[in-house]
Image (cartoon, rainbow, N blue to C red; front, top):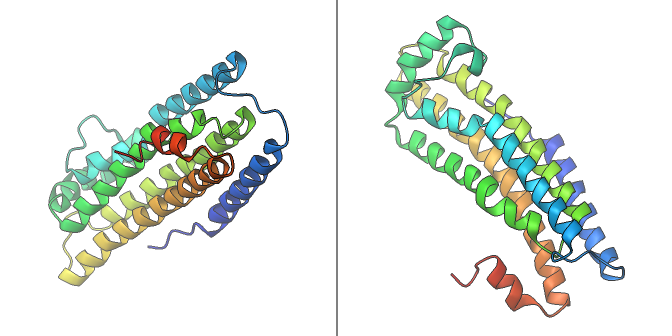
Length: 222
């Protein structure tokens, strides 16, 4: 299985460059501080919007349930598959849940959810970014979130390819490892964007002599 992220990664790289450039421009212009009432309301609204999107398209938790061998409450309509595929998924998901690579995949999915629920809010409320930049940050993470459904569909198709997983050891490993690699690439895209934005904030804090505040804000002393 090959999951191509080149076009999306290029677009996100352009977003990062745009945001980094805007940080430099905003140093010479008046930037609405986080204590400004209007800016604070705008940032809060942005994060409420992101939480709504995450709850509506929570494909990461769906995939975790599948890899746990527990698809109770999931329907073919929700997963975008027919009844026959759903029955195949019920058989296979209980067979693969104990594989080491499957556990590593679930761990990565947990980290992805952590980025969206714990780290992204900090970026959105970081006063090194203007409200306009915070909006661009939310939009860029939403683009990756939109990819999650395609990712889940790719993984589900791989799982139900053989509804009893009756294949030799190499075929079984290749299938499970392919799932792992697809999720790893997806996670890598998210980490790339987050780390680039964090570094942009670090640079501005460094230039303004506010590194200590930056470290405390992102709990880097913990």
